[in-house]
Length: 547
Image (cartoon, rainbow, N blue to C red; front, side, top):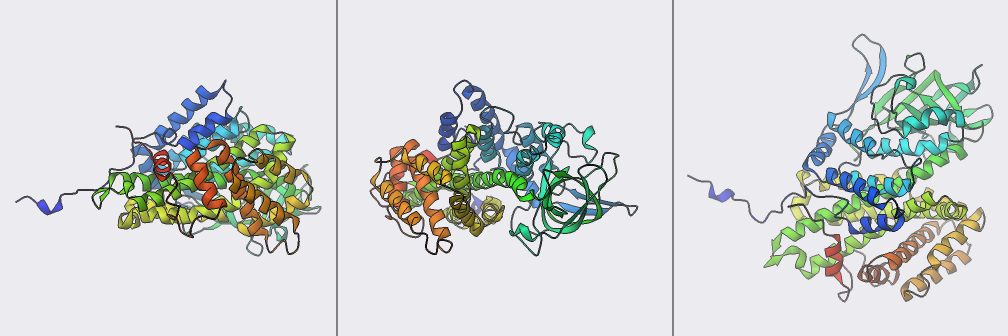
């Protein structure tokens, strides 16, 4: 007898078999905006190829497998020798290898490099956010190493290589390498000035041995790490290789892997340097913070991009589900209240993507005004965009109802991942304080920021009022530290509003300015004024799977 009670109806098809890049109008338009016309065909093809791979069932399965099988630590081999190796599921290596081959560790050596890498990072991270950590660390190590030309000559070609080589062996034998970072110590957290790891110079120029304990080490399977330690001349940056030139293992003792809320496919470790750990100095003694902050600035942009990537995937899943789900006599996406929720989520996602690409374009610009702009815009964007990530993930999950609460939907994985971007590379207070630090350093950063948002003066009265309110806030320096979060939030929102007024369709810019700057919205998503063009906003956010 047929089991007629188990007929499945009214369930959306999987969102698969589509071009993640091409289906994202805010992203494709941003790439067209910033990439040189002479290169746009090449870059578009490059990102389309990556987007098609990211939207494939195979890549999505790799992400699921990598998260279902977290990395494991092997401290010793079968004979008792200390090896300190981290084993990963094969799916992890496939994801990371594909990303390296696609150039996601190389923004520094090619024209429009940051825009095309940021776009690619946003696309490919939608398969799995965890393997974005070694990609980001490797990419961001380059500007720090450039403070020492001799080290950069050896390592930069390997870190920007398109060859993924996961084996631990001397760097001279490798066609490509990955880099990690270890700054945080348990007594200090974000206060890296409290570093107690010691560095003692050896006879060879630039060589030291390290003694200390790092509470968080990112990407512990990497070939080398940038670390902070106290040398005789003060806090200093060092490059610590995993394998020494003679082929022996450096004393890099992995004590344990962290059991994290999310980011399950990726390894984060607690490591020990035992007094024989060999490292090379990067830059001068006492200049450690200035050197490694070059790396931190680049990874903060990746925090913004990673949050934008997660938001885009969450919104794509929510819109896709509502498009194919029938409720109350029609498609769920056409119900006015659901459409309001989806449009509100889409606004947040587009604003994040647009801001990430603008920051990347400023990196590509490279001029003094670009650098001044980034000094304020990066911490402000990192603060605000990453904080919006978690509520977007929560609301998008709810759009799928009970289906979204089930692991198979992938939405719980997005939700667990969402808080990471806000914590990584300095949590909210650190970003707000860095905004104040940039303001106090002189007028150049604020002038560049005001020049940026001044391009839309008179285009929207709500944006104009918000800019005026920001200037009033900046004019009052009393108790400025206690107001740093408020100030940083306003800066980020005004910058997003200015970008959307310039570049987004009128219905998107109007809705953003009305609700984020004009105050015409509630505290939850789905409270947009009913007069706004929500249908057009949802249509713009809808991912279209291939037939």
